[in-house]
Structures are given as structure tokens and as C-alpha cells.
Picture (cartoon, one colour):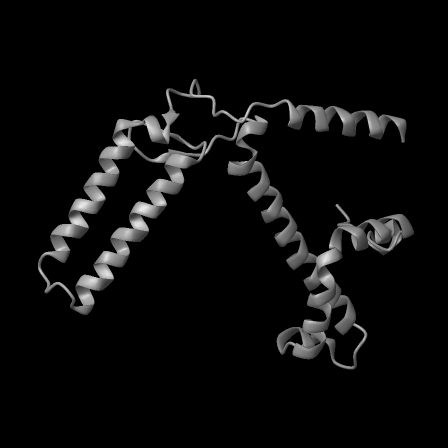
Length: 185
């Protein structure tokens, strides 16, 4: 427990004292707000939409839709320029996956989100198959999904890391060696 507390304190200090500035020395990338290519891309996108908008009457539905698209484009570019994202010579934001904590929001946090969601899907599927294996006709329940049972299992599947740990500790997660078939090679 002492070791865990020391490691937790180390990571807490690392998070607290990590600067919030983006490091621009990564592959020649610049902060998006400072990138001329990024600003050129913004003006080019807006000009194309304004040219298309000029082909329609001022308050027509297509002109209003194009105006909304211009507003969304400006808002998107504004959000990129206010963030710590880095842009390349092409004017597009690039994701940095080098392990720095300043780029955690770009890659690490979405990566953990993906792992959590895919684990939830796998855990719920495993739990459903184990539940229907005890029914009278399990093959039919694998083909034609029992929706009420599946929804019940899905609503409890969000705690899959805790459930997986409990099953690992109890020995229910992994099948014993004598139940695993081995090729007789």
C-alpha cells in the first residue's frame, strides 16, 4: 500500500507541475493560432462557402443553411485556435502521441475511453452468452437476442472492471486447465 501511495503522489505531482503549453518542437509543428497555413485554410473555407452563398437570394433556405455552415466553420476553427493543438504545414491539427501529459487530452484520454467502451461491450457480450447458455435452447438465444435480458445485462455492464477483477480473484474468469481442449499434435 505504501508503494501505491508513493506512485499516486508522484503522478499527482507530475500532473500539477506539468506546463499547459503545447511543445512546438514536435516535428516542426506550430500552435494552430500561430500557423499561417491554418489561418489560410480558415479564410479559404469561408470564402468558398460565401461564393456558394452569393448564388442564392439573401434569405432563401439554401443561403441560410450556408450561413449556418459558415458560422459552424468559424466556431470550429476558433475552438482549434484556442486549444493547445499543434498544426502542421498543411494547416491541419495533428495529434501527438508521444506520452507527454500535455497531450493527454488528444490521445491518452480518448484511448482510455475506447478501451473502457470496448471492454464494456465485450464484458456484456460474455455475460449474455454465459446467461443464455443455461437456458433450454442456448443456440437460438445466440441467434435471436433476448432483448429484455440483454438490456438488463447492458445496464449493469458499466462496472465491468470491478466485475472482471472479482471474477479473476474468485477464479471464475479463466477456465481451469483440465477444461481447455488442446490439439493432440
